[in-house]
Image 1 (tube, rainbow, N blue to C red):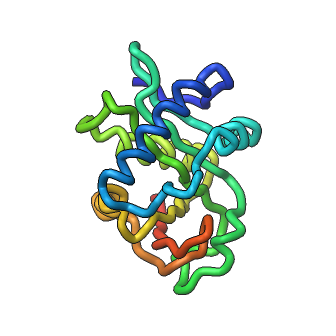
Image 2: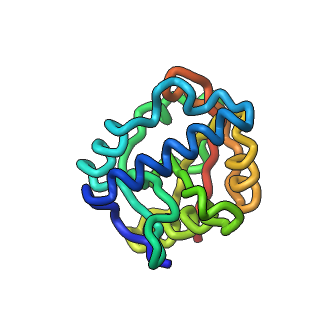
Length: 166
């Protein structure tokens, strides 16, 4: 498997993965991603800002997500407290392809972003997710992310997590 920056040639495959994830959230009874976001404009913005990443194998893309090195404005107004106040990377829009189910691909994506962050001397990863996204909440717990409070993102309140890298 290979972790790399996404390219414009990947858009169709990324959109297919996101559509599968949107439907999966709905099937799980989650309200997350049921309001027209993420969409193709989200992918285009991630590509334009250099934030779009994929994990691929010899058959194509297995996972997509955005790793944003910089400020997430919504994170400035947390109801709670972040563990750190310095530079950080934000992970958004993590989704796995249908064929990746059971492979731990989202966990792998987080691990890859953590390695990338450390290579850029960034030692904080911040994430938010919906209160009913059980799969992501389990990943946060498994990977040692600490609950820090709530942030208002995309029209709703989200649980906010941070992991300090060593």
